[in-house]
Length: 345
Image (cartoon, rainbow, N blue to C red; front, top):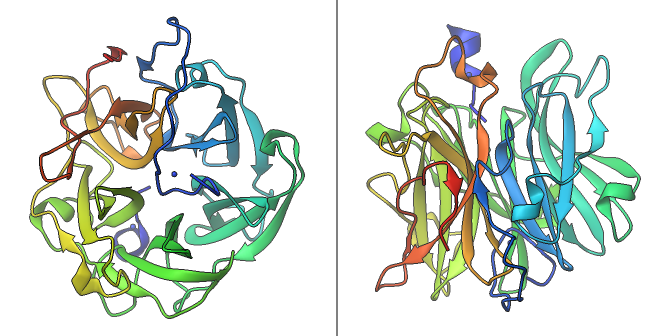
């Protein structure tokens, strides 16, 4: 999601099945389970979670008015899987504004959905909230609003992701910090409860590089991949048009990840628009291990460059997936967005 706070007002993945990806054995699947891109039409900010033999998919809907979820036994099956509305915004008042970028996680024996919501009288008064649901199947459970994520500042807050590292549950999110002239920066903290932090947050990165500040000064949509003795934290930068792209922070797995100095920022985007393959503005990603044991990058992108009006209200950000490769040093190589059609194995 695009942070609109300052510009619009002043001129804006194992175990507990968390976001962090861990190795999962490959499972034999029928030959007809072929992935075709786009995977899910008009679903931005996509997340796929693997849990108890199912793949769960959620993302932002163009109307920004509800939280949806679907599931399938294969990644390919998500394309045509029925979609359930887990929660709708109220008609007025708090949380009646834009609903952005849900993520679903399972921990402490319950389902949790983190999402951003505005207010009815100020749709861009975006804060992060948490829903909780009990039961094995999140598509058939009652959901309770736990409340707002408590952070040090009551400011524009969105795109929370959860992961475990060395036995500690962390939350990473995007927020506007007073006194810093950006739309959003990335923050990290251990979680005490689903809505409270166990320690003051660390500011991991501020958008300063040329490719991070095109249109808006943005670092948002974090996602964590743990591989080869390192932690790779991807994030999205710039406006949500064709300039939207992925950056990446890297830390050693044994480092103090709450120390910003432990993280190194890529000097260039690690994933960006492909004119040749006709995929524009790829971003807001997540990671998942598919039924064949492959690491997949999950992201959204448009099929065209030119947008009429505000790109935030162009509905055609489609969810896509593609395999991740690794360099000799163990660093993920995302390549370029693949063209539409069947995904090569």
